[in-house]
Amino acid sequence: MAAQKGKDLLLKFDDGTGNFVTVAGMRTQRLALNADAVDSTSADSVGGWRELLAGAGVRRATISGSGIFKDAASDASIRQAFFDGAIRNWQVVVPSFGTIQGLFQISALDWRGDQAAELTFELSLESAGPLSFTAI
Image (cartoon, rainbow, N blue to C red; front, side, top):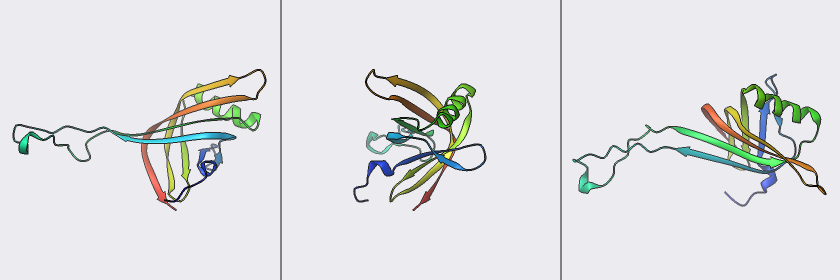
């Protein structure tokens, strides 16, 4: 994959009607995919080398980002989803790669304000089910 503009990485959430809406004003975004390894090493393992059990670990995704809300409606949607503990459908669009979609829960929501600057927020999401990938 060639170099891409960071602003093209998009974070979207289902607004409750099945339509995906870009989370307003995201300035930084991060997607991390992880899988736990399951050690299946035994006394019979060749040369004492560790062996892993394929497909047995827990897989998860974490999304985080920061930015500014463009309007009261987007702020209210994200805030309400957090206070409800809602698990909602989200998408991450990675340029020249594809779209990852699935259920996520907001695990952290922070606001920050400097006296001479705009109010910003930070958001963290944890996957809450299987994810799908659609290549571009």
